[in-house]
Amino acid sequence: MKFKFQTPKYFQKFEPPSMIPPIKIYWKKSKDYFIWDEKNKKYIDFTSTIFVTNIGHSNKKFKKKIINVLNSSLSHSYVYYNKYRQEYISKLIKFVNRKKLDKCFFASAGTEATEVALKLMRLNGLKKSRFKKGIICLKGNWHGRTMGAQQMSDSKEQSQWITTKDKDIYHLDFPYPWIDGFDKAGFFEKSLTKRFKKNYNFKKNISGIMIEAFQGWGSLFYPSKYIKSLVKFAKKNNILISIDEMQSGFSRTGKNFAFEHYNFTPDIVCCGKGMGSGMPLSGVVTSKKLINIPNANLQSTHSANPLACAAGTATIDEINRLKLTERSRKLGNVFSIYLKKIKKEHLNCVGYVTNKGLIGAIIFRNYNGVTAKNIASSVAMKCLKKGLLVVATNRDSIKLGPPLIISKKDLIKSMKILNTCIEEFLSENSKKH
Image (cartoon, rainbow, N blue to C red; front, side, top):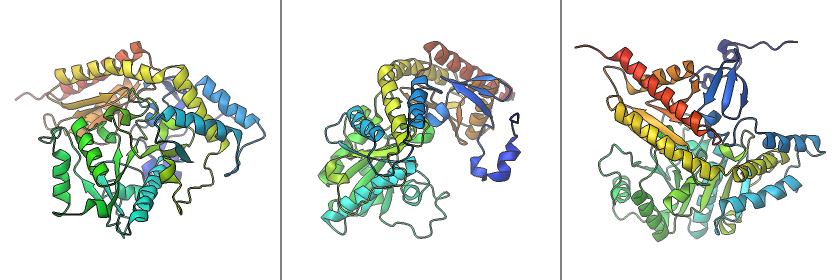
């Protein structure tokens, strides 16, 4: 029977509205950094699905590793030991390459990993004092869709369903580049003063801080002075730092992990997305001291299953074989040049451009009566028509992050397409007064 491609209405019949993609494109196949739709039109993928396929689509060695598991006599083993798990745990710890990050726990989705971090921070705090349970997070950051993760995220709209909020989770101002003094010393301290009462005892009441490696929707990284202040504050008050590396881990930013850009080692690293290159794999990497705490009970039906572990191993092997961390760094420099060029040429509608390695964003500003959000959506659709798929965020930005194997030639080609699409938008919307 010949497979029939269905329209979006078919999916909407069976699935919730949240599963409707901002750009309605039907994927027929994918290879390297290309995708094809049902009409066999070819696109450059500047999304890596959602920063997952760092090693490229349909990677041969990745597929071979998965097929070996499927062809073996082992498909699942619960928490019982298996050789794929044995291979992966040591390889991951070596890849993280931090002395105090020597233990790991695996789950299936990123939101599970951030929930584990929340649990570990709080349990380790309560071990010291029954009052040491507070968690500091940042406004605008995003950590997942489960209850704890959503409360750590600053989205009142998406957490309306949580009727009893955790009063010990606090949110500080994020250092957005449009806020005066965002990159100056003292911004972090001022945000603490704004949120907490004078003489608040942080050492007694706060167990952990959760940050995204960068704020997702705009690829907004922290100023170095901000992180330096945060780390100093945490150390002074015996507070743990967890970092959400879902989008940024596994070579995406030109480092194995984005925390390396900030020159510190967090207490807990939350991983996902690119960790499994398309297989459902997430996890936390932390220390023996923190993860061995009583009552953590870190276990799940699919934790460290053979398929996921094989995917994780293949991902690290390909990152190392293809030298993708270094490749991401070098191509990131080219990426940065073209992003800055776009901003310089289109200051009337482009507010900010950001990137590290092969993750970046263009943040638009209102122009001639058109909102920044509508500009972003319009440019994203124009890109699609020209064979370039970008991440439409449904707000005033578009995000950009191709598989790390993209060629320099096609990276430049994609940036030129993007620039042309912005020019077309401006041409169509320039009003004569």
